[in-house]
Length: 230
Image 1 (tube, rainbow, N blue to C red):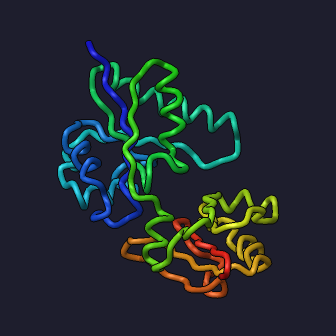
Image 2 (image 1 turned 90 degrees about the horizontal axis):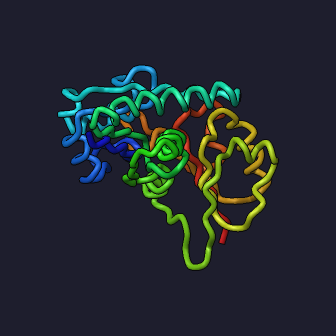
Image 3 (image 1 turned 30 degrees about the horizontal axis):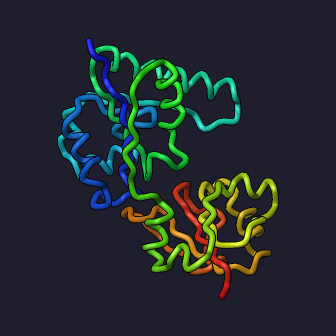
């Protein structure tokens, strides 16, 4: 029996209309949909996909839980368990479509499963989606880069531990919420123009036009765009 194929499919930042035609087609054409989280139907990625592809309600759902912790052993164990769960379907000749927020190549949980699947001899494919930082910049009405400006996409959490933004250019700061106060303090030292979007393109979206407007308790899906002043 031919083994199935695992797809990592980005569903975009939140607005179902920002899903790609290919993402929608793959969900329609395949029977097994893997969703990050303990409960598939409660996951944000599922809700986005369901609004664009109602047929997903009739698919077999595979919840894939990978805890956000710093315990390396626990992380590796959860990745292995997730890969094993996917491989059961692949061994049965079924394709698995793993849907993920934003783009499938940027801080994507499927990446960890992908490495294990490929090491075990399974075929995988990544389907891009609109990244959250591109959607946030569009919502703010600003360009991310112009002329020769570099763009740095960084996890703000780790940069606050280092205490600085060391490279010239513009920044898309992801994973900011857990240390928003420290992130703001770091940005205040740079003199950069700072804006942010919380829950970009979702019903509860909030836009912050300055560093001062960003609340210390901004939600998990908060993304900061920081640009050099001209």
